[in-house]
Image (tube, rainbow, N blue to C red; front, top):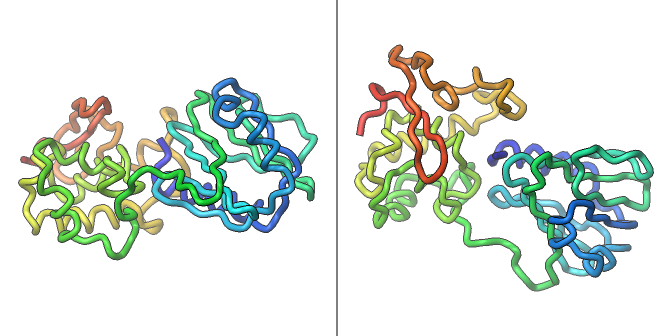
Length: 261
């Protein structure tokens, strides 16, 4: 799933492509997108100017001139394509928007799990979200307060978007490795000192200077990480084989020696 860095990068590409432009037409292609963005919604998009494009957590918000918001979420593997109106659409394009200057944006998703919906002026399309994972205000005091009632393991707690917005499976696992915290540790029991290390780990894995560009796929990108998708490979810090365990329906990777409960 695209996490904060990947969504941020996509949002900037989208912003550069469409901000200030006027929508000519919008089209939903896949049945799941037609349900989310029916004909009545696509008609309301016509002649709307793009006032602002922003990101909140893994959500992208396209603010329109009439006050309404076009909300997008990539889910597992969505992405934007910037093309030209009239060109053949990509085979995995699920919806597209044409602009009066001839620009087109396509929401591409091979699994058709992404979300795209229009929300009326004055409504909030977002669920409850915590502080942004890259916000300088994120500190151990905030995290301790959010986790004090959490009796489950810390890794799924970090993935809760109401705790930290934008952090997902990959970067939660990587952050815990940097902090030397077991993903199985009870969230409420993690000390203030260890949470401070965790904040440092989060900042490190999200820092562009420490993160090679591009998305991770099953075929490439594994070497970008310390533990994620590296089951059976040696830990770069101690040489112990990386383990994988299921947590909250997702795979968690960690070093059993470096990351003890």
